[in-house]
Image 1 (cartoon, rainbow, N blue to C red):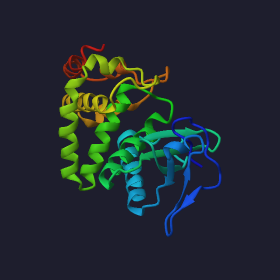
Image 2 (cartoon, rainbow, N blue to C red; image 1 turned 45 degrees about the vertical axis):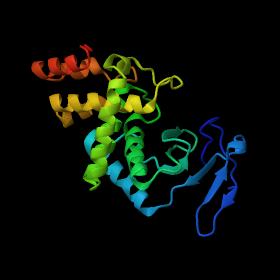
Image 3 (cartoon, helix red, strand yellow; image 1 turned 135 degrees about the vertical axis):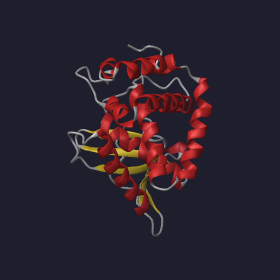
Image 4 (cartoon, rainbow, N blue to C red; image 1 turned 120 degrees about the vertical axis):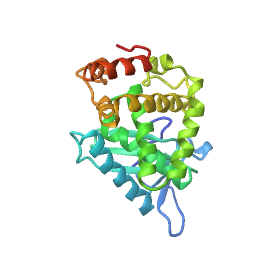
Length: 239
């Protein structure tokens, strides 16, 4: 069963509404005044795209140690990937009212978090890679016009946040930033780093160090000197 994304309380076992010929859904009993509802994603094309995202993500970033854990997809308040330790599964929430291409963008982003962040990593590098990967997947699936539109949107949003502010964000805290601004700056920086280091090398930034976060300094040391210097400059000399 899904959770209320506001309170994180588990919704009742029994679904609260059902439309003829459609899947059941739940109205949150704690937020009912706002008509907060959740529905399982049953669209076969979207579920196929989620599998495509998982296969491609595993190819790019490697298989996670818990690759056998299942994923469940729900329409909810906002995109989010949550690990449920009791059920030992991942629940991915997508935003109600999104069109098919928007849902695919969200799926690509959240499946990256399922594979690499796994409910444990809240770091700018993972937001950057999730933004890049979601656009790459759209393009690989043939949605090139929408992928280009998202690139332009992210680039337009990027100037509203500095690289220094991006690198200083603590994503474990309640959001005090506009997600569009965060994603824009993360994507733009990611494009620059990819151009400097190449996609395979950039994918290694998804790896987590002993302290539970990506080792950016170690990643820079793994590059040749000229590439490391270029990437460090792009990140404001993050070494």
